[in-house]
Image 1 (cartoon, one colour):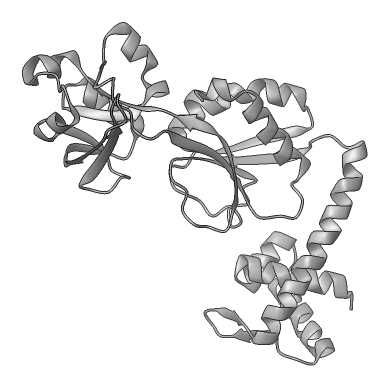
Image 2 (tube, rainbow, N blue to C red):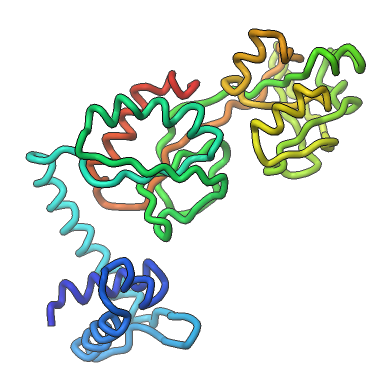
Amino acid sequence: MDNYRAMAIFAQVIEYGSFSAAARKLGITASAVSQQINQLEDVLGTRLLHRTTRQLNLTEEGKIYLDGCRQMLDAADLANQRIGQFSKEPSGTLKISCSHDFSASHLVPLLGPFMDRHPKLSLDVDGSDEVVNLVEEQVDLALRIGHLEESGWISRKIGELQEIIVAAPSYLDRQGTPGEPADLAHHQWVAFTRKRQPYQLRLSGPNGDQYKVRLYGRAHSNSAPSMQEMIKAGLGVGQTLRLNVMDELENGELIQVLSDYRSEPVGIYAVYPQRAFLPLKVRAVIDYLIENKKSLGV
């Protein structure tokens, strides 16, 4: 038995959660995966997994052995990639996950010169608005905007984006213009449904004073463009990223209100699975995004 291969298969089974998922990733049959695990347990003289029809659970011995497997595989991966850096350029498929709105308007246009620079790369952009599991979906890199949930992934901050409060001229003509944060409680609010309701808006004043306003959305959307269209249609006041409404502010379709008050900047992060050594293609695109972050509105 090839112990190194068996250890790699064992680690893949745990990473993907089942024999069948690991088999698909490895391009072999589930029975071949099962056979490798059985042989590994025989050689070690201990049970590594508790198997049921629905799930796999590590034994105490399995947990210890998995840690050793991962260290060994990371060390081998590190050695291979360090040597590869001397002779290789980024190649293969680079899969990036990013919200549909942001990828279409900012990310994809920015990546053209990057792809020209690296002709051996192919690009796969997952424009899902859901937070995907990077390992299960085989994503190399995700761009996330806003608060990061605990996930075990590695994150690198690219920069910060500013949110502003805007309304349509037609709405302000009917309802008046809020002069201070407390006035927002008496206005119709257009809400982003990914934020909890009631939404507590926090703002800093020109003198550093802090303000909190509880707001209930009259109109809701889980899409930033749809929310912006609701605001443009005069349904209420709303908060959005400045970079998303630059044209509307310039042509007068939207007006910024409470411009002397600021919310906390929103972080934009490059997120990737935990590895001892970053693949060259991932390192290259992260460096490129940071180098060109102004094009992302940062």
